[in-house]
Image 1: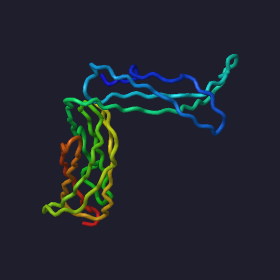
Image 2 (image 1 turned 60 degrees about the horizontal axis):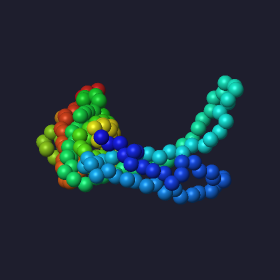
Image 3 (image 1 turned 30 degrees about the vertical axis):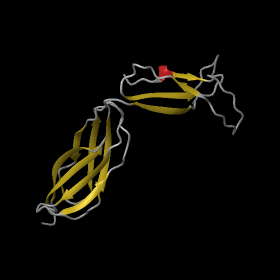
Image 4 (image 1 turned 90 degrees about the vertical axis):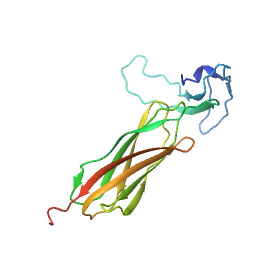
Length: 187
């Protein structure tokens, strides 16, 4: 469904380069007329050709240089994402910082790059902080984990953390959790 590599034709499949030399490679992309709308992905990788211990048992490390391609075919695209998990562990702490983990699953026809933020409120509803999370690409029907930290050390009572992720054409996924900060040894 998402594979674009059959659409690719390389100008040449082997290159010979001197040290510190660069070159350009022409890639022809022939998109079929019946290609489904949404994201399609491919990668082109090159690695050095070496004799890798043909007659001996050896260990070696090989490098690869490549380019990744993401192609979006226009049409009736479905955008959908959900927050599979949003948590802090443990839910009761004596003091901060508070570490959050979220897992966002992309159920769209193409990749998304959600803009995610955790908003923290105290037990009487006052907004205390916004914790922005990294923006990362999430490919179709895969999940990615995001981490955030609220650096507050002292607190008392129950707190609310709401994760909001904006993706696609202005769509939003949201989830709320509760946690406690209780300095029980001081009490």
